[in-house]
Length: 209
Image 1 (cartoon, rainbow, N blue to C red):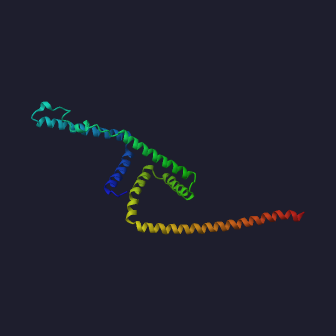
Image 2 (cartoon, rainbow, N blue to C red):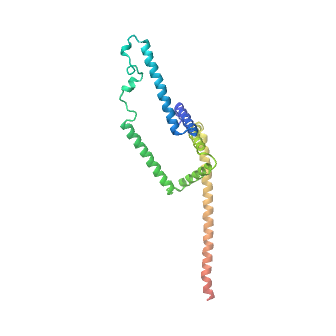
Image 3 (cartoon, helix red, strand yellow):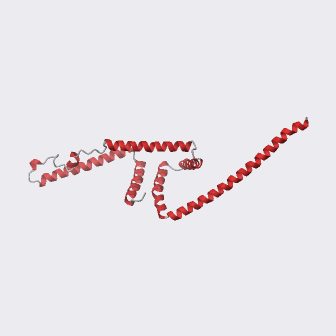
């Protein structure tokens, strides 16, 4: 992302604008408005073009609404915006993406990788908690802003960020190792104490007899 700044900026602006518009208008209203504007602008443009040709042409007999249409070349071109090949390619892409998401989701839910599932558990819990206090549109808007801003900041300060991440990872690994050692030590001590008490309880009835 941001390898092409102009395209990335357009995508960011379009995403945020779409989010703001859908907050005030329904999808049906947006579709009807876009269709009305597109048809209305083209109707005025085509008729103005036709009347202009009739006004300035020397022989108006050969001019009609069909031949004078400025979109005649596009109308005569047999190009298909939704060709069978494009639809098939798009369908295959959607199926592949859905399959990958479903497979990864199953791995996360069924704890294929303990650390990875724990990360997603914490992430979804944070999202669940934040969703209680912030509207969904705010969360989506912040997510879009982060998706477009974080990579840009990372590319600018990649060395510093990598160094900090490696440092934090090392500290966390050390803390985790210490905690694991302490847990194993306490578990071993508790096991020995329980074993001692069980042995003592087993031997006590024998002495009483």
